[in-house]
Image: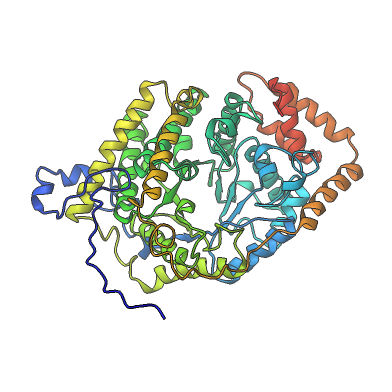
Length: 540
């Protein structure tokens, strides 16, 4: 039997936010002296939207509960989608596997062991039809998480599926991630350039934006993925600055195509992280809304108020999930979920507690979804818009997050913009520095992680982990091989050759990609054709 130990008094000594912003012991009216409420905050639903893009926010419509899924065969993913909807999910979100992200078919030698392993595997119209079987694609909001060139192919497949089902593509709502800067593993610049050339990939993302503006006006043609950048270890301030810099890069390139800002800006969305520094995360979302509104209206001259809206989906932070005592992650994601809601998110994905160990199990995704439902229906957090607006601390912190983020954004722009900073590896140096500081804080216990570097006794038993069966991966490989044999090659090869001939300055590749998928060319074959046309050779 353990001896009783008298607990010692405890106090919090860390008087700074996770981004390093100092926090006073208390905030008083004097901290808001000189604050221009009308200019900087205003009413919810009014420019610059610090307090929210809608007047009534969740009283008018709750945020979309959109937990991501995707694994194994298209049928496996379809079953998980239907399970989530049966449990109360209100929006569809599918993340694709690593081969798809990088533009490979499952039968490629580099892809066979990863086919369907940590995301959905889709290569042709048959696959996406099976993945979305029984899903009314003109009635359910669809979010499809992948980057170009896969994003261009997935949009082409979705449009082709709509026509096959007698649905007007113009009626489809949702988002294609389509962020050419979204790394999916490893160091940012190496991930983005190892399998594909970066510059033409960025232009292909703009092709998708241009095509969707003309043919899918209700569909968000890009989701700027600040979340993945945050997962590298950067701070909330850096997440805000890097995300806005990436968005500005995309806007400037799209404007060069001759599109007007109001033709596409209303369909730019953002994908953000909700971390554990509760008030800083809320301040970050509030600051991002007004920064984006001012950039789009004052710098790019947008006239449509919808162009000014910073609309964002939010995911609780994967970086905060811990393998020791994994049930603690339920508490972490609950707090992060609440921060996303108090910050005004349009859509939320809540991580499952077992994700540090595996893909989420059916039981853990249900708990993650229940977390959102408890926040929605039991906490009262959505009864009024921006309930923390007017707090001396939150308003002050919003200003300071904005000030710090604008300073970093100005630095990026002075260096030539987001792409230039990525290619020069300046961005990588900032990530490495932030990650090193984060790990130093954990190693020294300056940054306390319960169950990791403090309160480590009494670890939970490891939950039963979910694994994608090896035969499911092999099933994907076999299915794609059969498809290629049975379809023949004449039509698809001819379409791929026409796609290659289309590659060139001023040419939007989307019509040729749509023709290729309708001729039964696969996602990997289309990506390979683009690599050849771009003169890119993989260093494998």
